[in-house]
Image 1 (cartoon, rainbow, N blue to C red):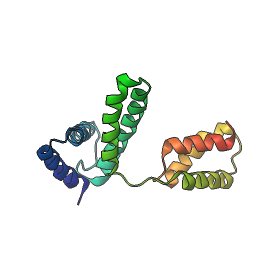
Image 2 (cartoon, rainbow, N blue to C red; image 1 turned 60 degrees about the vertical axis):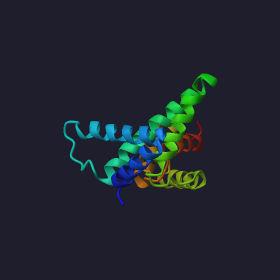
Image 3 (cartoon, one colour; image 1 turned 135 degrees about the vertical axis):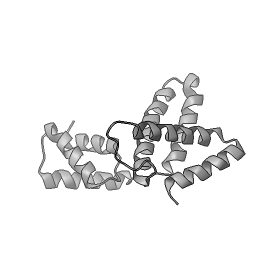
Image 4 (cartoon, rainbow, N blue to C red; image 1 turned 120 degrees about the vertical axis):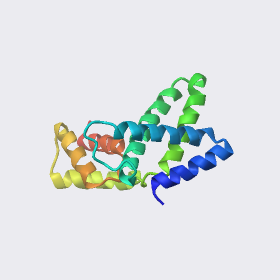
Length: 152
């Protein structure tokens, strides 16, 4: 089944089960997709898995950052951090699996050696090259590993 079909099925089940976390997450993704589809120059199919993966991935990334921010508030932000964590966990099931940290580190080091880069000033070029080569890598982790490897 497609992501849209899976989300529609989950939405119906969440309504029946009164699962507010899934309901909120699905509603937000539908809103985000509608907004993206209404942008000038939009040419994708708003029902395609590729488009929905892009929307979900961007939302998960933003909510992960927000969750980390709420966690810094201690007890005041704990409830919201937990809610965002649940939404991120649920929506991540629609995304392709990311490579693990060990695989990412190996690929980063191999790429840096292949490119012959030794200067930290070229970190952006290396990161861009790596992310274009493999879409299953976590960009934040790649950034961190490239900068560690090049000596920052």
